Amino acid sequence: MYLPFTSFTLCNGITVGTSYEDVIAIMGAPTDEYVSEDSEYGYRTATYDANDEIYANSINFTFMNGVVNDIEIVNYE
Image (cartoon, rainbow, N blue to C red; front, side, top):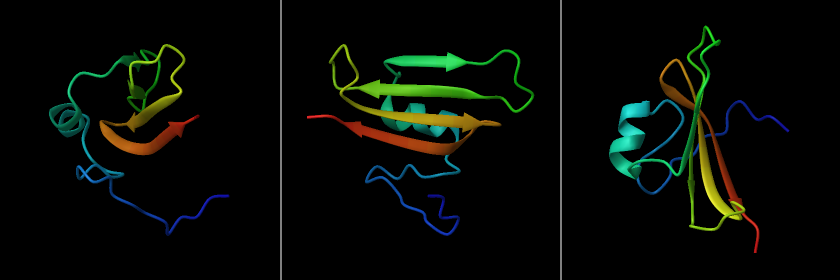
């Protein structure tokens, strides 16, 4: 379900609209990163995982045009 009025801020200050540079400054280098060379919207992702090879505990940021537009938190325990 999409709720356009829903927003939240992570305890470190990251929220939708935070720049890629600010996320890297706060979180450090991502565990995994993808940058689309074909996207006219500057699509990229940055994943941070809890040192488990299956990404059972991770946070994934999706960026469009250099800012966060999606945050996914995964915790499979």
